[in-house]
Every structure is written in structure tokens, then in C-alpha cells.
Amino acid sequence: MAEQEQEKNQSQQATDAGGKKGGSKQAEQEPPIEEKPFAEFIEQHFIPAVKDALSKEGIPDLELWLQTDQFPLGDQQTCSQVVGQWDGGNRRFTLYFLEDDIKGQKAFCYSASDAPPSTIESFMIDEKKVNLELLVMYTVQRLNGQKWLSLN
Image (cartoon, rainbow, N blue to C red; front, side):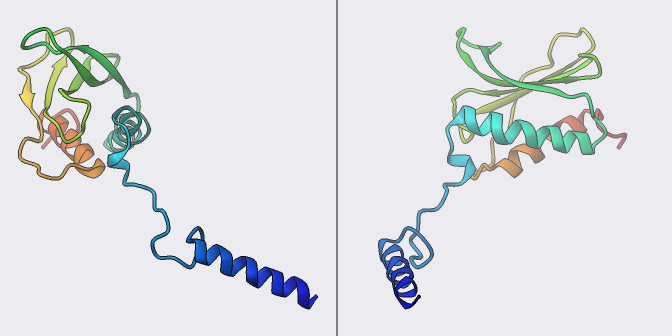
């Protein structure tokens, strides 16, 4: 019994010395989700967070997806786009990421019914730090500015 206790203590000390568990403050930490690859961040974190936020605003039938498509302005370049629609497709918005980087240039447009998209507007241009919470907040705020979420 004493031998088992001694082996356990030696094993724990070796683990602590190696910095793999418990004893080291420099143990490997998961990087912030904003540093994950772009598509992984969007699909695993941003899209579920936006769906949750808009569900709380009374939008239960939101469809939201990531696609790569042509940017409507400029020299026929393609970019990553988060497209959302609800109300049978009558409400639609697109968040353009001109670079596959959440900190890069972004643009936003919306459309109602069968109308063509609105003017494409810059999105989050003054933010120095971009994280999941801010991306979600600005998306919801922009849709609320259209009075699509509540009558304000």
C-alpha cells in the first residue's frame, strides 16, 4: 500500500515538473476562439451565437450560412459571406468579409421581399478589437436599425 502511494506521488511530481497538468502556470491554454481559422470561427461560434441572439429577439425561423460568392461591387472579386434569411426569405441580410479574417474589412446589406439588396454599407469600421460578442451585437443592432426586430 505504501509503495502504491509512493508511486502515485512520484507520478504526480513528474507530471507537475513536465508542466502537462496542474503544477505549471504555463500549462498550454486554448487560444481565444477569435484566433481560430476563419471558417471554423464563423461556423462553430458566430453562426450559432447570431441564431441564439435573434431567437431571443423573436426570430425562430432564421436560416444562416457561410458561403463564398462574388462581392457585388468592385472588380468581380469573391469573398466569404454570412447570409441570413427568415420569414420565408422575405427578410434577408448579408455580412461580407472581404478578407477571411474577422478583423479585416467587412460590409453589410439587407433586402426585404423580392427587392434587390440595399446599398452596401461598411460594417464595424471603427472597432479596433473584434471579438465574437461585438460581431453578434453589431449584427443584431444593424438589423434592429431596420426595425426588423422590434418597433423602436
